[in-house]
Length: 343
Image 1 (cartoon, rainbow, N blue to C red):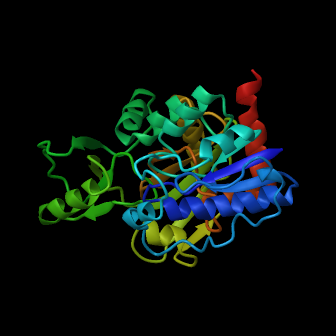
Image 2: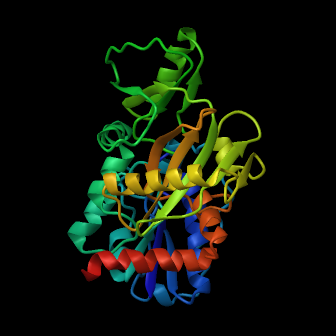
């Protein structure tokens, strides 16, 4: 098949996306597909007529994920043409030439449904869930409301818009961006004195945030593919919490899959993951994040509709635990995604 792996973009998770795209690109090339790795924002300038036949390493120059999220202003300075146009030169034309686009994007303008909606209007096939469920899952406030409606446990919290007054007096708590990912802009706040700085940090990445109760406990994740849960994986940071640095720097966290859990608790967590998948109307695949406190109470934090596929990512480790290697996982995601268009 002719496949475009679409990565990069302008979200704070740009570097994670490029690393994900690089891994997927190489896997699909090894599977014999005519594959192109394309930066959705920087695009491609040149002749596109025989692009899929060019012998070229499209992943050349993509390095490892940095310790901190990238400066988007520096990325926009590299753009040729209007920097306010999201799609780079040639992107839509090239994607339209492909049999399917493998979405390796993360965060804003990638995981929030806008690209999916644009592709739907153009008749471009893509991997993952549709635009509506992407939008719902990306919005943590809306997701939490649906969790409550479907009796899926999650930390209690409030939704706050920029400039809006709020009341919160329970500490410690967590402040996070409402439409963010990769723990960018997340702070654990221990007292009222720390609140203003945490609020400012979150609002530097968006104009909406969530304040929620801090759950002390073990961290887990459960992938769901085609409505079926994968084995539970546990994430134990060496120090601190599972922030951007600990997620993407090798050796900063210990990951165990299958997780060392009582069988009943593991099954309950998998059941909750499937419930989230259905409640948010997700399709193809996703990954749900959980906390487990010392009373063995489970709390769902969020759903990730385009989970990371980097060297340290969780979903590939979960798939490997049941005998699905990385290349086969990428192929499986494409096969399931195409079912959306065969109905």
